[in-house]
Image (cartoon, rainbow, N blue to C red):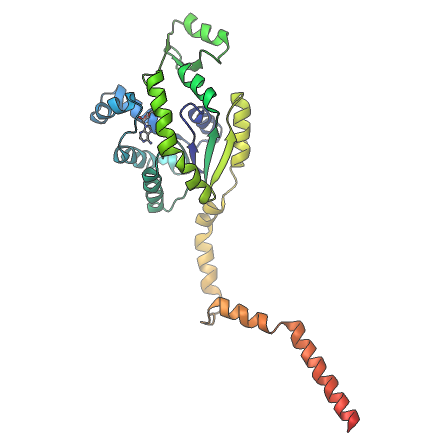
Length: 283
Ligand code: AMP
């Protein structure tokens, strides 16, 4: 399956994408993670992106498209993937559709992780990563025992550079202005699934799997799209085996059929016979 995760920063896209990756094997492709790695590695791209990310703005469409193309070309993405944080504006949505089309692929579903604004703020301002274990925690929502465990293990609770209040405000503003319109885009394509993303992670995950028609331990059912990919050859063969069709356009043929329905035809036949008999009696 090829899934697009939509939702504001802090809506839990990454957490849920990681669960799907673990249970179903579709790799999570997060442009945020790829960019953060580039920043940490101080690559030329990372150095270019850092200031933009720290301000909570969007990195250039061409840079992220290049990263996405490179990532989905990897063998582990051949069966499908979960896009987390991409696309983030309508140009990126077009770029993505074109990149997939070139490979004969399509998006199977776009999931909107729906979270009220006040909860988003707490999730973002309270988010911390344990420097020791890498576990993502929250000072407002995580059980105190888990927060303590990080410290006891000798870890520090680190805040992401772009999780400060000013940057968070801008990231949410950018989301409203540029990313939220994609909800309408995917709804119009008939691909949108909305998942209530507040509450326990496990409950949200249950709703997400239900929305995607996924069950752990079961292979995802082929969607109409990937079904077509698998049967395209067979269908083509069938077509050539059929007797040649008339060149008349289908609609015209249907109309002609409808104008002389069987019943009406029988009725007129019966009426003609009756008339004939009546005439014969008269004669
Ligand atoms: P995220 O971890 O998805 O919240 O992304 C963190 C930051 O990385 C964003 O605030 C942007 O600066 C940048 N970023 C991530 N994904 C994209 C994208 N698709 N287009 C542009 N910038 C992005």
